[in-house]
Structures are given as structure tokens and as C-alpha cells.
Amino acid sequence: MKKFLVIGNPIEHSLSPTLHNYWIKNNGIDAIYEKQKLNENELEQIILLVKEKKIDGINVTVPFKKAIIPFLDELSIEAKSTQSVNTIFLKENKVMGHNTDIVGFEASIKKSKYNLANKEVLILGAGGVVPSIIFALKKMKVSKITISNRTKKNAENLEKLFENIEIIEWGVVPNFDMIINATSVGLKKEDDINIDFSSISKNKFFYDVIYNPKETSFLKTGKNLGNVILNGKLMFIYQALSAFNIWHGIRPDIDEKVIKLLDND
Image (cartoon, rainbow, N blue to C red; front, side, top):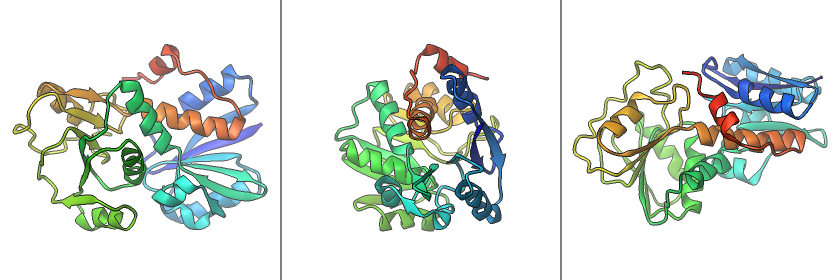
């Protein structure tokens, strides 16, 4: 039986096992997918298990998408460009790191029918998934990308990877068409991002990469102010589909059953 994992810290919120095990069962694959909470000093050991073929593939979530890179043999173009890895597999005895968050985010926007061309986007956060989002936004020809992060230095590090992004102080709300919460604030239902959006006009697009819970306080605020909202469920599903295809050579269908499978709250 093949073994797959998602690793992170925290990891309790992850619905990756629910989705992957559903697809594994539906496609008659002899495999199991589990979640494992790790500390950073355990990353090297988990990659050794991939080299030894004791683990067949790994998904990586917060906070290890960059920290895992030194232990990998090769990176895909997408992973190298973003310095972010969320999918690991063995190819010709080399441990490969790939980034499927880019296609996940892009597919979720296309599915929402929102046209990002020439739009101004504000991103809250500078963590693991943000380089992937910036990469995708640039592909989708947005006119401006602004980053706000509590620790400004972390946001400024993104300027080493990408040109033409603006860094602003946390709590400042510039004009935007779309705002993305890419922080972990919202994983707990009582979390509040504590930014005042009362000055913005209606019909903005509030997007949260968090999918569990399905409506964070950030999204509730956006909705209450008369804006379009979308959580990270479709991004999560499409990045998972891409990883599943890498590991198993199968592209499973995404239907209403799959989408409802993840509605657990």
C-alpha cells in the first residue's frame, strides 16, 4: 500500500486526507493519505523517508513551504520562482519539490468568473502561499499588487522574488478591487483580523485562502459591507487535484459531491 502525507503545524484543520482518500477510493488505488504534525527539526527525516520509498508523496502546508526546500534534490520552475513547495514526489530517485498552489489559485478565480485583468489587489500576509498568489496574479495581468503584513520585513522579502509590488504598513487600507486574506487569522472561528474596512465602497472581492471554517470573520465582514466573497475551498481542491495527478497519473472529476464533501461546519 502506498502512503501519502500532508505535513504542517498546525495540521488539525486540514481536510486534505478527506479529499485525497475520497479520490483514492473512487479510483480503486491501494493507498492511504494521512496528516502529520511536525516541528521544523523533523523535516529532514521526513524527506529521508521519501528517498527510502517509505512515503510516496507529501503535501506541505503552513509553515514549512519554504523551510522544506533545503532538503529537496530539485525544484520545478514554479517552486523555484516562488521559493514555495507544497507537493513532493520521487522522480528517478530524486526528491522533487513542486508548487500546485499557483494553478489552484488561478483555477479558483477562473471558476468564480471574476476577471482580474487591470485590477488592483491587496494581499494581507506574506507567508508560504503568498508568492504563489503573486505569481498567479501576475499571470492574470492585474495592474497593481500591494502587500500588507504585520511583520513588514517578511513582506519586503517578497521584493527579492517579484518586481513591481508595493509594501504598506499593517492596518492601512488603500484602494483595491480585490483583497486576499493569506494570513492564518481565521483558522479559529473567534479570530478577527482587526482591520477597519468601513471606508471602502461596495462590490469589492473579498477572498480568503482559508477554507475551514468556510466563512471566516474576514469574509463575514466583507459580506456585511456588501461585497462578493469567496473562501479557499476551490483553490484547495484544484491544488489537490494537481498533486493527485502528479502522484497517480489520474485527474479526478470535481463535482458537487466533492465540493460538499468539504463542507464540515
